[in-house]
Length: 336
Image (cartoon, rainbow, N blue to C red; front, top):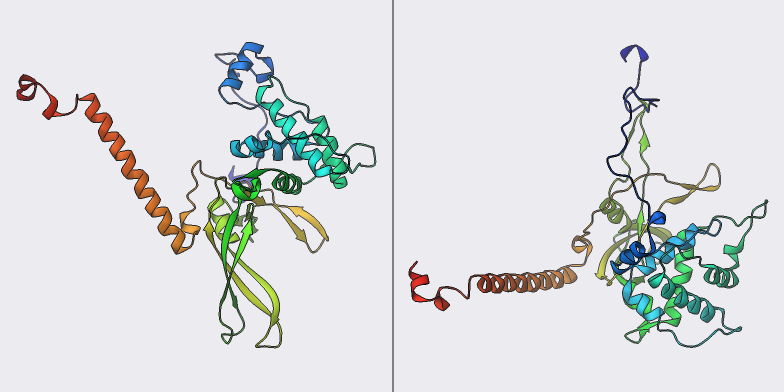
């Protein structure tokens, strides 16, 4: 390949194969090919049914599936009482969510969310935009999810609090310090969120045709999101000044919702651009290092209690298997 003068990391396309492709040992079976009794088995195992795309509605479907993964929220939504109200569009959307989630629990085929989509567009007309050919336009999934969460938060309760605030609410300890003078003391404030925005950076091109940097892991994205700046009036300088904002988690929710911020404003084109970059995340995300010192102490104490309980349970099972230890064995067994 040397005569081709290839550059480092230069993409190449390979067409065809020198080997004959072998047929799979077992025929691949897709969900839509399963028999009804097999579908019922999947439902019993807790596998949720999908939502059918009704024409560029994947943004809505994905948000609904995120909420469907929080059983406490679904229990609250499906317990909503009352009927439709022509003067309360939020109530109507919440009722449609109730009926839809109930249907998804027992469905043995993909669900068509016509009713929910109709009431979503009635309450939020931006999701009813149509293109020049008459079809509905694609929308931002995060915006749609945020609107749905706000409605459910106002109509559903958990522990006498808004369901979304109670189950997804994050409390952040924010330290604000002027970056242009030491005359102003650092201030602290509490900020409440319903999801953790994780900022993504694309790789920076290098002179040799390659690239470097960029966000590869969700932990890198979280660390970047916990640092920020803002510009506001400085009382000591008498003008606008830059302030640094440092975030630490003060309280974690039962369900942590993270959002990859992939869109940014491109100055040269004056349009939104999307960062197309794969970001990996672990099956178990430890948030301890992003918390305040006080909250870290609480986490350590709780983990120590859980570990102690697990050790006690392990020891109890061990004694049960061995018949309660030497003290409870018969004399001949103990001697042996």
